[in-house]
Amino acid sequence: MKLFLQRYLPDPQHLRTHRKLRFLGELLHDPRLWHFSRRPTVRGLAAGMFFAFVPFPWQMLLAATAAAWLRFNLPVAVAMVWITNPLTMPPIFYLTYRLGAWLLGKPPQDWTFELSLQWLLQQAGAIGLPLLVGSLVVGVVAGTLTFCTAHLFWRWYIINKFRRRRRVATCSG
Image 1 (cartoon, rainbow, N blue to C red):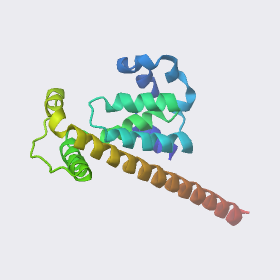
Image 2: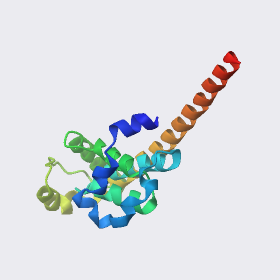
Image 3: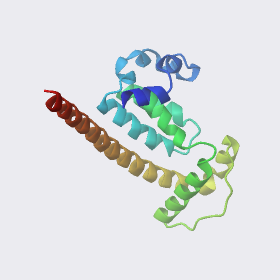
């Protein structure tokens, strides 16, 4: 499990020296941020999933900052944000907007998504509150489900690993 995660996640040295993360300073040198044990990794997955649904352009910085301050696995939190990318953002944010409009009891407006800060600022008044409410609700639900699922999967994996080890020990002994 750890080798799989380490193979596909950003390199810790690259993240420590990333120019946009310099403001975190010495926090980035805490070894707990880079450790792939169950608690920090599962929490990093959940935090990254939450921040993936935040409709602001600095999702990775928000996830990295939260991971550094709360001592979650930073590469995992940053990587989970990539769920929302230029291909997935339009449908995700459209659906979160529709959910937010429904929750607020407002009729949804017709709009087309553009991947730019200028578009976001122009549309903030018309779609901002429903988009924010829907995104936060989906982020909390997705983060919670990710936490529970990852925690259960990790536990299942470890239990099965011990069972296999015990079977091998009893068969060879």
